[in-house]
Length: 284
Image (cartoon, rainbow, N blue to C red; front, side):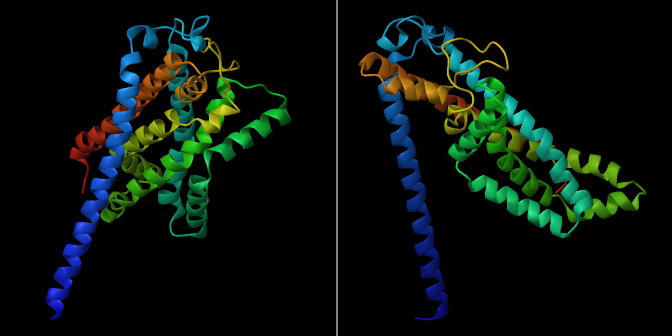
């Protein structure tokens, strides 16, 4: 058997292997979605998404999870905005002013380490900081802690997008007599599609996180009232409803999980759509 046939056999084998893994991932995703829809579709109603919990909600009586939906959106939006305010200037500084020095490498390594830290560790850190400062669980504490979780995701995603910018863009722009600050504006405009995608991915990660907000944002049956008051979230709503022994409430937990899944799916599709639509006018 010559080398050409061996290469073809290897190519077919690994292609078949990748298809098997892809099919396996699709089957697992389908099973997860199937179980959630099967167990939760019957309990899903307009009352559930339009009203906060009422008295006896966790005993199977009336009310909904509007407080958790609103709280999750507030937490994810606030955390993503806070992380973007830190990540975008840092990444642009690394590429415009940092060059190939040691600082960008150390910063990327730090972000990679932060990405690998479990969110429960961030929650414990935020809780310890709250105890040190004498604070109570609140929406603000949850936003700050969740921002630490999504910061490395947003920063490293945006960093890779900026790396994909054409190398000649810098030389061409600076050759026209522009300053580095003006080039920074050009680079930001070039990478807007990737930035939007990074922000949406960070938002999708933040809205589904439970561990980071468990100790910091707390939980309440009331609607979010201020930054210094506790706020509910969808992942914790699923957890608390599944913890009850009542089948009606457990069915609502699966309906809550279905709502959360649909939100994450919508954000993911929006990220893909924005990357496709906004990237049409990007210089390749």
